[in-house]
Length: 242
Image 1 (tube, helix red, strand yellow):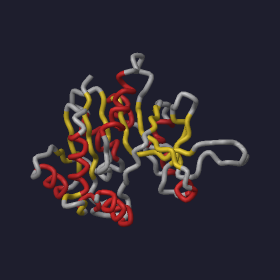
Image 2 (cartoon, rainbow, N blue to C red):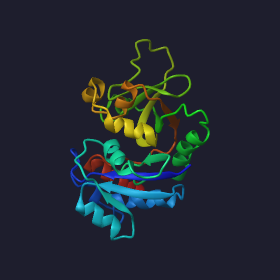
Image 3 (spheres, helix red, strand yellow):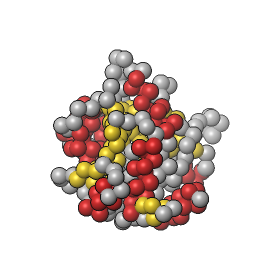
């Protein structure tokens, strides 16, 4: 099984433009993410896929591998699908460019899902973190996921799900971390499918897979790290890095 990691890296992020080129402990966020992914030694290859000459040059000038997207893309899955379409690969791990605290243990768990999936019942695997803080549960920037009894995703939402009508029921809330592992076929299917209403409404690309019937196996991790979506996140990341 050939497994590679691809890191989609868009320069003009909506909430924090240029965030991937911000300084984090003496290196840029995107370079930290790339180096952390390479350091896991889990992959046959690690490649940054970007629409930006600035990011491309940042990676390649520091000895890394990068590819330029040929088209404009609305999401990371589309950007990666274009890049892997003609590559000989079985499983692709999507590490977000704003995840400099990417760790070996969590990524190993995703890879193990596919190694154990002899019947190829899993189309994607992704990470989640158990959350208890009410502010985070109710924050629309925190994407929540609910599961079936086999840890397959039922739905993702920016709303707090499940809604606790009965306060006596003990339920867990899980935050979805934007790290995905795809079978190449599932990724290419996504690339060809038009967006449907749930994805369009929530602005969550993972809903496209569910709307078209793909199965997403969720894997719990205890590694929280910091996803850098805002200037405040960057400050938290700097403190954690120290």
